[in-house]
Image (cartoon, rainbow over all chains, first blue to last red; front, side):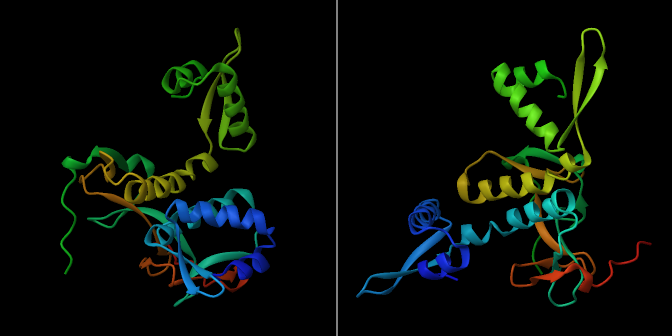
Amino acid sequence: VTRFDDFRENLGTPRNALRDRLAKLVDSGVLAKVPYSDQPPRYDYLLTDAGRDLWPVLTAMRQWGDRHGRPDGPIRMAHAACGAPASTVVICESCEGQLGHGDATMLPKASLAPPPVSP
Amino acid sequence: VTRFDDFRENLGTPRNALRDRLAKLVDSGVLAKVPYSDQPPRYDYLLTDAGRDLWPVLTAMRQWGDRHGRPDGPIRMAHAACGAPASTVVICESCEGQLGHGDATMLPKASLAPPPVSP
């Protein structure tokens, strides 16, 4: 869903509220407004890289809600290829081990170990 | 930091606002209020399991901010043991591969593949 009327139909949001929200998401760099018709002027609202990168934020929030807010919720995120549950976790980019909050620390960027070399 | 006066000193939050926020976090099950003195009555505010489970949410948000909000930010989260950068990612609980948003799907819980057996 990328167009005003389709958002409206899907979300049931009043026109004014939807217009404000889309403008906010465009202003904050989460959506890009791309014309698909000049006459009349019409736009697709497409996710930017920054918008796509919100995915782990949303999945982490949903995971928390599934665990603590609505543990009886009927659906869960899964790996499409194998059907096993998917989770949001924190990993080390070098050893790829999962980190708990006691395993992580905040460091000045200049002191970070270099990222692993891709094969 | 687990005590009212220490929160106040660390955050610079006015007493009333801090009292309201702590009460909200206790009500929502993120903090537990545990007495450490009866006379006068004094409390530690301790993270619950639900509070601790907010960690991936906060790290995912900070990661987004580091990448798109303040890419010039001076610090990054790292694996304490090796100093390499840490990231919030979505993984499959079975094959442990990292998933992009095209790799994930929402399934009814009843149809999920069983989780892997722990060794």
